[in-house]
Amino acid sequence: MSRNRGAEMLDALPSYYADSRLVGNLTAREADELAVFHERVQDVLRQFFVDTATWGLAKWEELCGLPVQESKPVDQRRSMIKSKLRGAGTVTLAVIKEVVDSFENGEIGIQENFGNYEVVITFIGKRGVPPNLNDVITAVREIVPAHINLLYQFTYLRWDELDRAELTWAELDALNQTWDELEVWKV
Image (cartoon, rainbow, N blue to C red; front, side, top):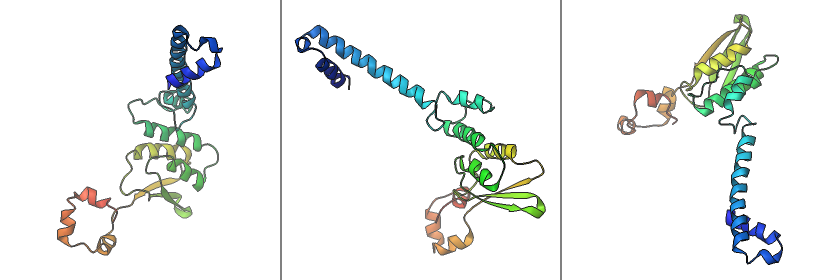
């Protein structure tokens, strides 16, 4: 890349520099430095957006009032930040859905039971318990009024789905899955 950039820089100079090894070497080195500089500028710009931030996530966490947790995976940290940003304002089912959707495996169905003062959140995107369920619970609890009870439900493989697959016990055994793996298996 720098050779092309160096050649472009050399082409922009007066033609009497074209045969100069010294000028050619200088423009090649400057092109290398400019490429490094450009990448560093791009890296800084990536920190201004939650979806592309890496080392800047700590600043986002501070801005959102979250503890800086550099030991957590980047995608989980981004999810917490996004949920905090989305959770501002009046709490509706749509806001709760937006907050939970910002997490990994966060696709949900949501139901409100007015008489029981509860909201039922059912994870439907992937089967089983999401890996960052505690973060989801914390984020939702922060935005939902304290008098509302939150219930979480998870989806698993149902027997009727397994029956529809029409597998013999030998075929099922050949899948070589543990019970935990089978519970979240998609037919």
